[in-house]
Amino acid sequence: MANKAKKMSFWEGIRAQFSTKSLVLIPIAAGINLIGGTLCSALKLPLFLDMIGTIIVACLSGPWVAALTGLLTNVFLALVANPVYLPYAVVSILCGLAVGYMVKAGLFRKLWGVVLIWLACTLVNAVSASLITVFVYGGATGVTGTSLLTATLVVALRDIAASVFSSAIVTNLIDKGIAVLIAYIIVRKIPRRFLSQYAADGAGVEEDILDDDEPGEPDEGDKDV
Image (cartoon, rainbow, N blue to C red; front, side):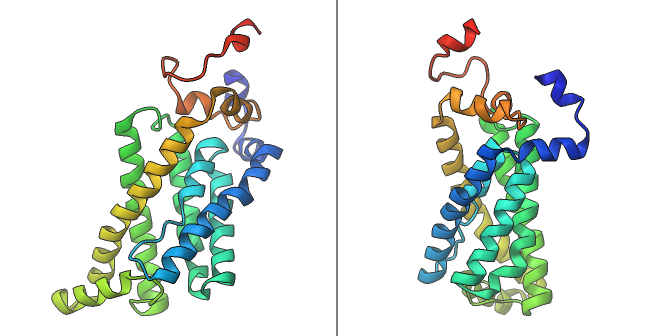
């Protein structure tokens, strides 16, 4: 399976990620994102929590399926919560790709790798979202509690771009930390046999997430096959 996956071209690799199981997983993951995003928007929390499902999909199905999940999440959030979310679809796509490729590189195997994924996701989100906030919305959207933090920093720093970026870094360190932690716990609780189904479909994620010596459900039948 590993040799076959290596011989795939770039486009064949992307197509392989979109198996039936992955397509079924997308609306479930997008629903998880919608619950978190809508809740934070309604309560005006300085968080987003709209990437938990995307990270889970990145682990199970690969980066491009995660990117599509992120895109659909923002489209739905724009429809049911606030149109402001639509331009930030770019942010969700970039984060899905970043997390997905880091998982494929094996960084989800160890805690230090999970920390790197958290920091990378935070940086990608902070930079891309800040650019959208500054150039599209003039520095604030008013959707979540982050706008209040940004306004406070503008008074202190007297620079809109620096204030938006600083606010995004602080907020995303907490938000993406929660999202990555929840996704990590969920993925670790998934039985190996379920993960192997996604690996068999071409995503190749089972070996990228779990070490051979990682405790989990015994694969009695798998060893005999």
